[in-house]
Image (cartoon, rainbow, N blue to C red):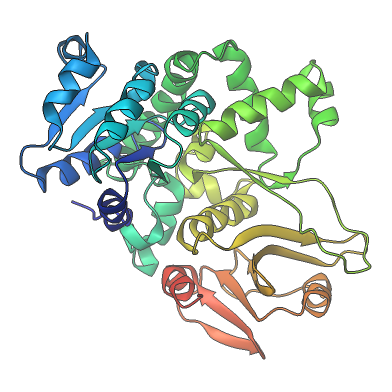
Amino acid sequence: MINRRLLPLIEHSLADFPAVALLGPRQVGKTTLARIVANERPGSLYLDLERPSDLAKLADPELFLSRHVNQLVVLDEIQRRPELFAVLRALIDEKRAPGRFLLLGSASPQLLRQASESLAGRIAFHELAPFDISEINPAHSGLQDFWLRGGYPLSWLAQSDTASFAWREAFIATHLERDIPSFGIRVPGTTLHRFWQMLAHLHGQLWNASRLAAGFGVSAPTVQHYLDILEATCMLRRLPPLQANLGKRLVKSPKVYLRDSGILHALLGIASLNELAGHPVVGASWEGWVLEQIAQLIEPQWQLSFYRTASGAEMDIVAERGKRKIGFEIKFSSAPALTKGFWSALADLRLEQTYIVAPVENGYPLAPNVEVVPATELANALKAIR
């Protein structure tokens, strides 16, 4: 069993809130984590709303759930019964005790909106992402395998790279043909699959809706809608540009990254490390993988963006918290070399600390407050940032 970093946070929220929502894409480990939480609370009730037998128990949900006032009730796949949110609000208001409901759902715009509106002030939200580097804790020799396969449990734990690749291809098909339609989103799966593949080829680049729409044969608002769908279902991340008054002409478009490196590689047909090493996307894939690790592991109070000016100054990631700024430059090299644009950005931003994240075995300083950090030590470096 791989210990999930989110477990103590869920326990803490259950001690403070009547309801806790655990959201994320399918097959990421939500059910396994919920069963661990439930097993630690004797008498907990687990209901899977995709099972007809469990769904039948909620024919009169208020009557049924009111019989379990002093138990933790886990409701898995809550998006199948959105009308339950109003019932849960009434039950919570009758007895506002912590730890009454743990709600599991595949992330969707509709689910988030309904939960937020119905249970405002009564619920804490957590997103469960695929495995991160702190949970896998790979050795330097195994780091690239983790990058190749990504963090979905069944992909990472597969018997071979071939089996892992086949699982990811099946996951993509299921997400397009089952999950997205179940959220009430009416976009043909083949259309969204083609768009997703186009984004894979543009991974880590600036978002240009007009250019992509022209290549795709649809309007700019339409491709923006497709982008919103994949972002809302936790498949991609938009990294905004830094908003700062530095007297510079700054890039204003966000960058777009697929969140899981394994899914990215499956969409591009990359099934092995040899294929990845020779692919044009290798550097951008590494950059996106490191970005996702930072986004998952850094304290949530930090806001992430990138910095780029018209004159060529650039920093891959800038983490801001109040007046504090920390920089991350990402290099896929065993001997990372920094460009003039990096040093210009360093002078512009006046960063507290800058980390060069690379697949090196040992870290070393490059300049005052500039340090090369092995990717395997990234979790420890981020823990030191408070």
